[in-house]
Image (cartoon, rainbow, N blue to C red; front, side):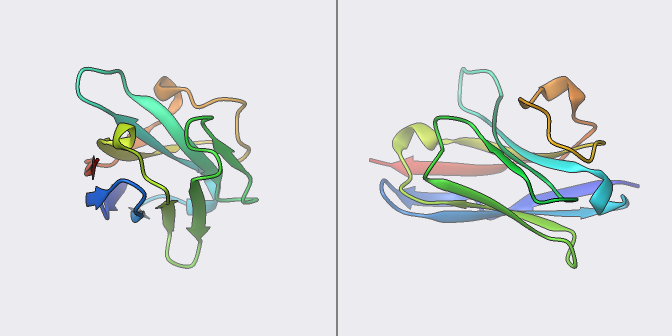
Length: 126
């Protein structure tokens, strides 16, 4: 059974940092792209960042470039999202997800992701 467990959310002040983790089990880690999505209240879920666990290539949404860093530890089957310089508009529930592909696509397409974590809530105070 494939399982993604995302964690690390919490309350942070604007300008602060948080690190999210996504631990995967039940799948061949190198065969998947792992992505982070977020959904703010009243808004659609959007792609934030993704990483190929095969070659380490990464994708960032424009809204988080230069502030967020995605990384992976293949030995631990875990992907991290380091979030720095947090803004109030980063407040959302963050979900990690796995897509059965090796190479990153040009964009993050929600429907192409096969497995999802339960979500971890991030709240950034002003």
